[in-house]
Image (spheres, rainbow over the protein chains, first blue to last red):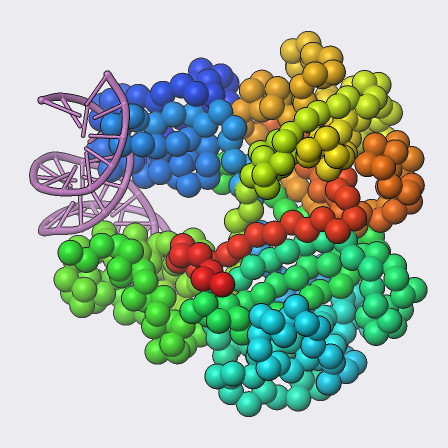
Length: 229
Length: 229
DNA sequence: AAGTGGTCTAGACCACCTT
DNA sequence: AGGTGGTCTAGACCACTTG
């Protein structure tokens, strides 16, 4: 039996091989349905997946075209520190470094009155990631002390689903962060920042400072199958 | 009329409000179809989107549950330098720095015999990004000189769709890259690396070196609507 | 004006997994 | 064993946009 995956993969193969070159128009859904001997809805789902991945572009009346500059669209799963450490085979531990961490101006502008803290995620008792965390005080239930458990999981439970803005950069560590990580202050490292929004209001912001040499990796596979190598 | 988006958004609101707490089981598709007065396929599409975003987990017979640790899954669109510069309002230009750039061992291990080059992407005639590029020589049509046009678009046309592995890190610039960017050698900057694979064979690899202060930003919105703030 | 994709319906069968 | 999600069908109507 022919499923929507078969059709999606067949079209993907045509694109890869060049049979459907960038800019080319695909046969219409009706034509593809006849060719593959399936209902139009099945074709629609197959082509819809290719469109969601940015490989083709669909427009009513104009039809479906292979994109000339395919969006290299990758999905990242942002893991909590504990999950990432344990996936790498390390034993996770946690330490609160500063329960009353200052709130910089740019964060205050976003969050309004906020509480700051600095904590450390360790792998096999070695520092692995320093977390600056700021939590807005509006409309937020009384926050725990976070001296035993990290703030991330608690926040996820309080506000399970939110919008987020991520940014990644190379930035120089301040004194507190460097001391926590055990590196020289001013060392430039990889920083991942996340701001979390609910209904247009910022709720919490976090900056995650990694050790020198850290890499964030992600994979992208059009069509779903993972890279072999 | 009730569409699948309405149902998706209604369920999302229940999850956000806590009416459907983490771990809770959603009503079955049949029940939701009755509640909203739509066909089961419509409910299925709505819940399917939430599942694709990692907000709920579906299992046959067991039903659909709200994930306890929601995957914060974000989609990145990796832009070509020219597109990113022009989107930021700059005038794009290109310069080839070294048509015979050395191939480091780790790249050679992946690509086999390869050609290397170093080039520069400029915004308003100021260096913006240095690109180290290596192209495998197997099964690749004769490569142009790349003295006028960047290699990225040419490769996209040759091999429109490929798997890719991305990585991001903070790394120290070498002499050639630093000279191209006009910064001090050894400066640690944000680096984005991409390896491109086709059918398990590496085709090309690239390392993109940015200026100090560069940030890569991306947004994530469960359900599709963008963050308001 | 006409043809394309976008969506929905009502029904059906199946694979899978929990009970 | 039975209920759940997963998928497909055949048909329909609609929105859009191009020619």
